[in-house]
Image (cartoon, rainbow, N blue to C red):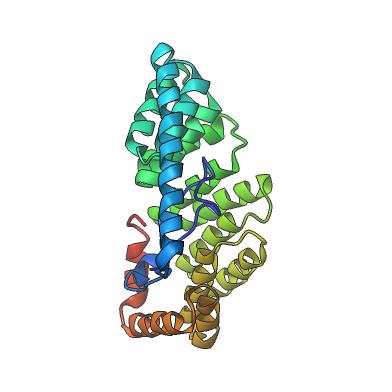
Amino acid sequence: MLHRVFTSRRARMGALAATTALALALAGCSQKRMTTGSLADAEAGQASAQQTQNLAIADKWAKAYKRDEANPQVALGYGQALAATGRGREAIDVYARALEHNPNDTELLSAYGRALAREKPGPQSIAVLERADEAGTRDWSAYSALGASYDSVGRHKDAQNAYKKALALKPDESAVLSNMGLSQALAGDIKAAETTLQRANRAPDAAPQVRQNLALVYGMQGKFKEAEAELAKDLGAQEAQANVRYMRQMLSQSNSWDAIKSAGKSRG
C-alpha cells in the first residue's frame, strides 16, 4: 500500500500521520519488506525492547500526572508517552482535561489537535488547530496536521495555505512537501504536484513513502516507467512492477479520479 506521509520519522513526537488522500486508492498495493532468520529476530527484539522502555516512561509520567493533571508540561509529557505506546485515545483525553485548566496554551492546543488528527482528521481537529493558529503557535507540525485535516474534508486551498505556514517554520521538510504535493494533485494541479514531490524527494531525510507518492503522481500522468523506477528504489524490481500493474488497472477505470477524491475523505 502506498501511504501518505505526515512525518519523516515515526518517532518524532508531534508530527502527524493522518489522511491519505490519493494514496488510499492504491490500497491493494504491497510494500512488505522481506526479512529472514536472525535479521527478523533482531528487529523483533529491538521493537520489544523499545516498547518496554516506552511503557516504563509512560508509567513515570502517569505518576507525575496523577499528582498534578492541570500542569501543562506534565500533560504534554504524559500525552506523548501514551502516544508512543499506542494509546492515542488516552492521550487525547489527557490533553482535553489539561486544556480545561489552560485554555490558551499553544503547546497543548497543538498537541491536542495533532492527536485528534492522528485518530481522525476532520472538523474537530480543524477547530482545535485553528485555535492553536489564532493563539500564535510556532509548531510547524501543527500546521501540517491542519493541512491534512483540511484535505480530509476537501478544503485543498486552505490545506495548501496551512502547509505553506508549516514550511515557513521548517523549510524543505520532506513530509510537509509530500502532503502539499498530494493536496495539489487532489485539487487537479498534477504538474505542480509532480514538482513539489520531486522537491520533497530530494531532501536528505525523504522517507520511502515520499517516493511512493511521487510514483503515484507519475502514474496519474501515464509516466509508468518513471513510477516503476521510483518504487524499485525501496521495493525492488519485482514488487515495483506489481505495484505499477495495479496502478495501471486502477487508473484505467472510468471513475478512478472520483474514487481518488473520495479516498481523500477517509482515514489513511
